[in-house]
Image (cartoon, rainbow, N blue to C red; front, side):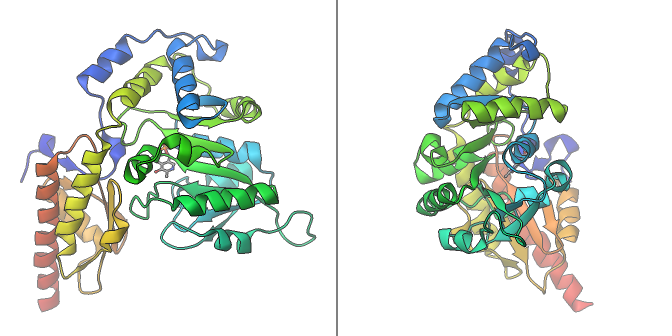
Length: 356
Ligand SMILES: *Cc1c(COP(=O)(O)O)cnc(C)c1O
């Protein structure tokens, strides 16, 4: 068994720790009280993100979840309908916050984390109807977390945002991993963000900063977001230490994301060889691999526990589904070791179960 310090951690790209140079950049940050807009690094990060995303204004927030909550609070009213993809972060990973903080309902459409303009058109509930809850927001998650880092079709997202504009529906991009989508498609993040009213990007995922996300949109949206951030308890003071890590990440950790994608592709190819594993290789686009254990295999929770014993940490999303995420803290060797361990353990343990 590997020693604890040598664990290969593929649970998420959020497990990344700041490198020595990032820590140096954080220590050198010129900080101030961000509630007086005195924090120079935070101001610079907000300007840089607004500019990179082609939006008027941007706001640093402690987490991506808070960014998503703020957007709901600014752009919807209680009782409204919000259209999202299947397996969306809003429905699965925000602890029920959308219902609690914004009193909205979510309608999940499409499949595998994606939907088409026509799916969307059919799901819009018109305003001023005496029975329907009005649809006031559509969210697109790009890349898609629970659906294996999938990239949303560029023409569809443009068509969806066009329809949204025509229907008076606010379009919101959950771009926690937007740079992964940009690298995959060979596009700029500005092109991917352009059709949306507002966008969130995370510094704390594959970019490797210890925390923080940034919300971007027009000046009015950001003005309202500042109030909502405070109401949610997210108005912090010397945020420049985080912002400096974010700026370091923008400069140094974007170009290398293609390596994470290559590592995820390698893991996917190796695990897909197992007769107990179902994985559509075309679903693997970026740094996430989500696969199913078939009915003859052990459960995902058993595999997760067994892998841990062998020094590999993964995430069982449910009883049949495992997620592996590559990031700057693991190299090719680690990923090959982990994928081989997955295959070996699944084969051994499933065969043992079958012979009982
Ligand atoms: C991680 C994630 C978030 C939330 O970010 P946190 O900083 O963890 O709150 C939102 N959306 C997606 C798609 C994510 O993967």
